[in-house]
Image (cartoon, rainbow, N blue to C red; front, side, top):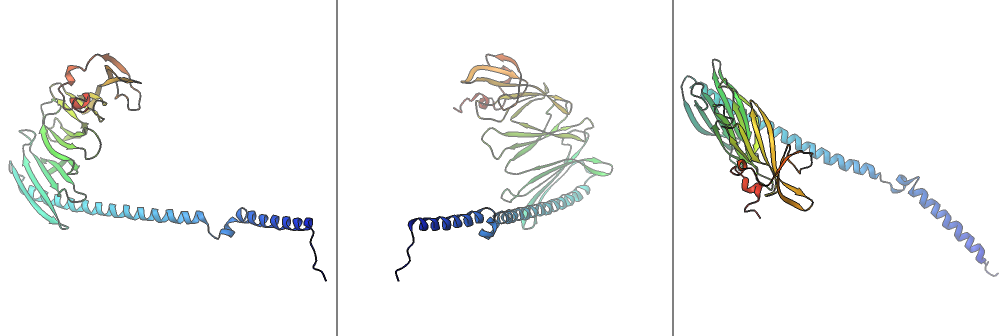
Length: 310
């Protein structure tokens, strides 16, 4: 018996039906039943991955906070021990002691200095605590107390990283005839001139101090009660500022900068109400042909002018 034959049209119809059926199954699997076909919930996998990263971040954060808390307790105990030593000498006019201790296998240096540091009538106690700069995180603590009938009362607590700390000084910053406390430091990161000073003003009671005032690249003029300085920025492209002491406040007087247009500097100098060209609005008070003489002798003027930095 001859083999059955299939006509060309019948074959095409059969192939068409089979192809259509396969495509239907494919798209049904890829769309309406996608999760069943893949067998994997990708959003759930991503969520698990994010959860794992978040858990690791929280774990690291918790460890950091625990370590910081432990360090805080350790340094607080060191301070309390230093205060006990100082209290034993509270009736003396002056007292100085420096020593080192080992705690958690780390050497900590302690300096106790009781003297008439700021005035001739009211003595202050200065206690410094510090770790070597190789310790992570290493910190310098400076605490200042005044002497009262009830013992020593804390009036300043300053914390500084050794890699930025230069020194601290005592001098009249605002021209009121009273010596103030100044911490000198230099920024550890960034591209530009960044000499900072943290200033604590001694109040008229000759015992307590103001809040912390921070200035960048400042030059103090106590006789004028003025602070002039150079803002943060590249040489020849930044501005200068002029502030004035107003009790325990700072009044902004003006900013000085090179005038710019689309082609760059115009050769003129502008005096403005706010630091110009950094994204916010500012008002030009006047335009000059050159920099006022009062700014030419401040620290950092060459940086502002770009002299020697081309």
